[in-house]
Image (cartoon, rainbow, N blue to C red; front, side):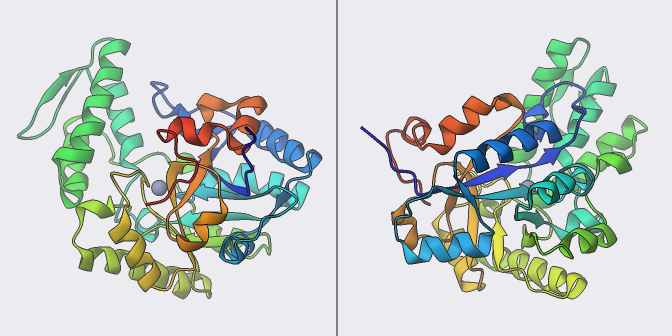
Length: 324
Ligand SMILES: [Zn+2]
């Protein structure tokens, strides 16, 4: 059976030469600039057309099958390595790309909490959640177990609004600043403006506070979406037309969120669910799956296999088309 893949939306986070995950647990969010270069060279040599998200949305809406495969490249969270390490690679190959930015991360109203948790666990010998559980962190094995336990606790036990104050308190107990170091952080407005000035770059919205939208009321979801677009428009002079759900899994974005994204006027919205773009997505532009290329799959052959569409049914209980 041949699976005809219409297109792919590639999802990246960090692009930097060195891995900065002290426990190796957030390695999957990072690829090297060399690997990005290899992917782009390979896509071009096999004849894949690399398009902007505007063009991707047009093609999905038109629903026509294309003779040539096509792909869009997206990067979540606006890490500053996107500017320093990924941008030169996109420029070298003249490839369009989209960065989904969350103004709360830029202005300090939100933090890359999963990275702070990793840093905290790496430093501490015991980690205690105020009024909650604690984990021993003596060995690397214990630290990794603690990290995953804390990820679950922060994701599912705490409300979205509790996460940051609890993390701040835990960092204070370890004499640690609740943040990541400047060179590992997200782009400041000035930097975002710089990269947004390139015609190759599209800036998309990613909410203000990077909350799991499924855990918020519908009113808060609208507000997170609208305010992030308002802030990006005010700072960059252009209203973002595209949106990415924070976390983006089935536990963080579903039908309700897709409907709200459409109501808020976004042309497209992407999830982190694994899948290629099929003709059927014409009816579901606000729950587009992506192909994550990450540190765990840093081999060209994996990327090529995923974009061919063969792994979509494997990752989705036999379904060829992944929607909300
Ligand atoms: Zn994100």
